[in-house]
Image (cartoon, rainbow, N blue to C red; front, top):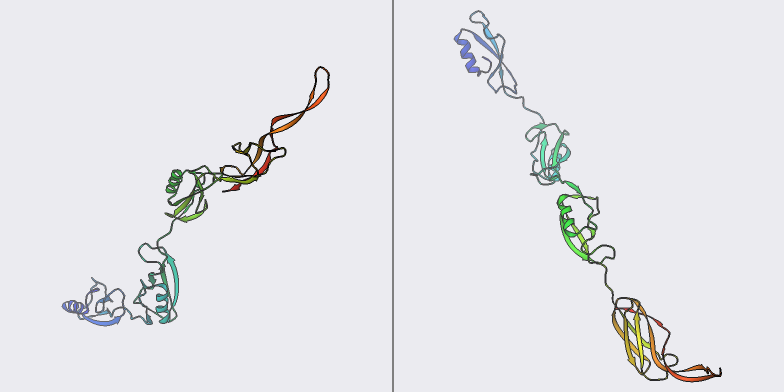
Length: 298
């Protein structure tokens, strides 16, 4: 009669002229009122009117202690406060979750509804959010923009902003710098900003100066020649000094100035027949010694 209700068991035994004696016992397996065991096994032969001892379930033993609150889904701080208010100690572990927000309780052990003595430990598993996959940042320096973008895609990253800067060492259109150091670890899908070279920065210079009359100049037309350090020349005609120069658009920052003019020159002449010497005055073209001049950046 094991597994039968007490009523069913008594009826079955009575039908074969046997009596029963009942004792009760807690059971986690059998519902209350169901026979757990009998002292005479099924199939044994005994005298009529014998008594069979039956053990009947009165259900699970009622737990003693404090009922555990349900804190699943609460924030870690709220869950701890609730459980500690009931007198429990709380242990917290974390794990990644794609369904539970960061900082919220995923599960608790023991589960809600059970009972524990005051001071017992309840373990909470708290979400650390979606697992973050880290990847290494490639070295993009010196690459063209398209090559750098391909390299980032292959590494599981994205190209962020693209800006430009002057560079004396990196070819125009190639990467000068990147926002994250090569070899550093970042979250997969991160955007890496790059800066492309515009090539060397071009500077232009201007020459602003006054030219004084050179030694030997006594008047008349003169040609002033301004020669930049890269060989560029500019010429000016004047018949009066000082002469002001204000020229722009040079690619170098220095040069020199010469003045060419007509001047009387005394020459010593030798008579080929007699060998006698004489001093004669002639007119010739004279160019002054170069005067160095520095240019100012425009």
